[in-house]
Image (tube, rainbow, N blue to C red; front, side, top):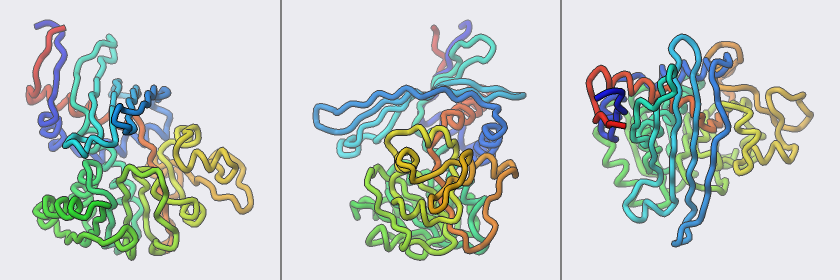
Length: 343
């Protein structure tokens, strides 16, 4: 078969990912982003309401990583909020890897695991960099696929975290989530409990990671332990008081956050209630202090004091998917994983 496309199922992408270090991949691509060694075009967004009245959307996210080992591709990720009520994942899609020499599609892979893993890798890499010394407790809000990827990775990579509180609006879902992950957590020395409320989960936590679908803020500054790190994974869980009250506010890409018309930080900036890292600070107006890649590259300060409360707002970038998918494709070729499709 000449010039086939390699197709990888969800199980095969998981097999390849198990042989990778996702934190190293994500740190590297974020550093390249800070050095302007990526191409990140605008996303294409299609939103609609399903016949059942649920919010649904499709996003096409192309990107290219430049440098010595370039990678290019795109992710198409679709979602409907009521999928979980029908036993389906909330989000699913496909990622394509391109040949940088010819532009032809060389690999097509199920996107869900790679997407969830890169999201968790950004969060856990941020936590590893920014947690205060001696941090032991974490809170995860939500019990879906993204929450699971976060819990698994934090247990594996954040050695100091020994206690985890999980909250979900459906208590039975949270209980089943914790029980399903308990063997993995026990193997890494993490004791998990189901919290009775979001506030109870967050109370006293050194690390807070909301992984929800809410569009209504509910986490308040008064809930947070001084010195905590909040990774605002789902982007709308914290309120303006947290943005204003934190000591350090970091994003992954300020232009994406600034130009977004839906999420909290973009709305605050348009209302004049937030300044960007490239803007003149204004008295009494909270500011974004920098981007994660700059912190990883050592050109922007991260934590400088144990009592700093830090908010990380990772909007999510297609270069993260493309970088990780490129590594998955490399492993798949080495192990001859997947199915070769004729064109």
